Amino acid sequence: MFKDENHPIKTLWTGLDRFQKLIMASTSVFIVAMVCVAVVARYVFNSDFYGSEELIQMLAFWLYFIGAAQGSRERSQISADIMSCYISCERKARLAAIFKDLITLAICLLVTWWSIQFVAWGFKMNPRSPVFRLPMLIPHAAIALGFILMSLYHFVYLLQDITTHLRLKRA
Image (cartoon, rainbow, N blue to C red; front, side, top):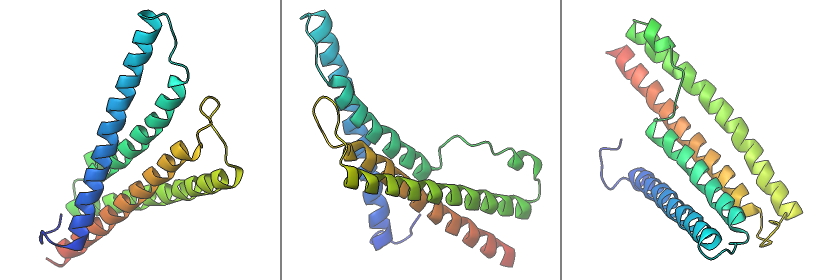
């Protein structure tokens, strides 16, 4: 994406990638470990890992929303891009992609705004989980951070698509 290896934006971009992959990997490992412990406790020791569902749910929020952000970063999310099948003109295809990027960014920014309001409500109301009384801001923050990152990535890709279109239009 960036030609200069020492460019501060490249450093940020790489750092976000590493951060997201670390969150996804660690939450995956912890979720699997907790499920295994719960199964062993239940079926081997006839006991219960009380509250495991609560912890797994909080980790799952981080896995899902950071994973969604990573999907946006990699442009690997599922899309119904049927227009590309019907548009044969390269210029029109680029314009359609820009239009799609605009709609995606607008929706993402709206949901980001809602998620930030949700976190603000969480600060005000301070809801707690039922078993361990953990702050529900833990999973709520994952929602907001995930949508903030998705909005950032879609904004960057919109700028890239516009820049590409303008550069090719001049050529």
